Image (cartoon, rainbow, N blue to C red):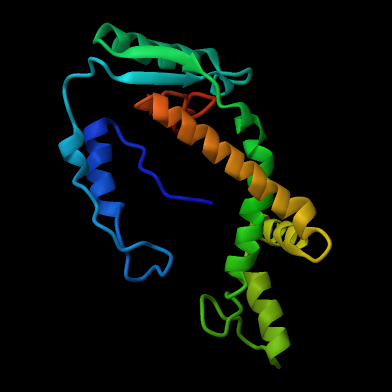
Length: 203
């Protein structure tokens, strides 16, 4: 569920960054071996005819006015340069946070199970037996939030609760993915705030 993604000063930097991180990774068995385009070649100075969708579900209560103003200024600039823009809807997006807090801990629980001190990661010292080593290693190596997520994820994946929680969350995830697929059949890009609040001052 969690994916890395560049946040950059401009589109050109994002394209350069994406060129560096996209593609097959020999150290990652989940990555796919396929040809990756040069994303910098998609950069154009002309946005005339660009179709922009603004999901109404992402401009909701809780988004600070300064953030709204910045997004609206960006949209107005793009429209003044010839882009087409309209409001759109991603109806299942409102359930994304609920689905995330089931799926992400479940994946964390499964993926972090390997960090037991035997082969991967930290190994606690002074253990008298294997069971104690597991306990001490995971107690020392994981912070409070990670432990909470492992517990929640293990619960969501346990017998009797899997379909009620994890299974339902995956169905919601599919509905959200379909919302985005349909939107990208109509629009070239979707515009939204990256954060509901402005950045805090350093210090």
